[in-house]
Picture: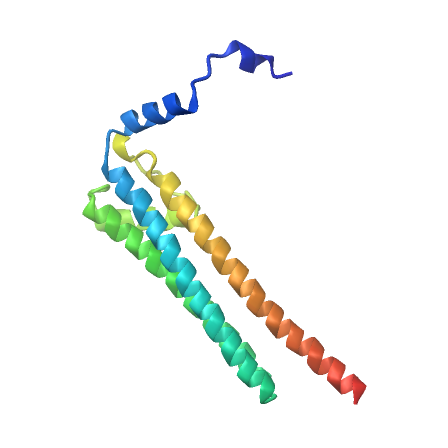
Length: 173
């Protein structure tokens, strides 16, 4: 079944890594990798802060039996999460502008947005040294969206939990 693998001369991981690193021939790509790691760390802290603030506000509103305000704070949390993603796209665009990946700024912004959201609609001609750039930006977007989705899911769970608590309390009375 996998006999073709035995017939192929597969390189070791070290060989493959060295070939890719040589092919890129660009130390600036490591700036991009470090930028992605830093942005993901900052994204995680911001999303945790948004979720923490939501849960604190939600707890206060629940104790005071003001249930509609929790939905408003959830909506605000969604807007803040969307804002942090837009900021990250702009940061990627600025990094790409600083490294002169594309000749025009709008083209750079569209590229950063498409790669971050993994839409991949545009037909961008990248210089050989930047061929790995879409992978780096899209990975950062995928992981950032995953973190945001998990946080919003827990917030929604808190809201749904309050509604079922409220209904259980009314039935029990």
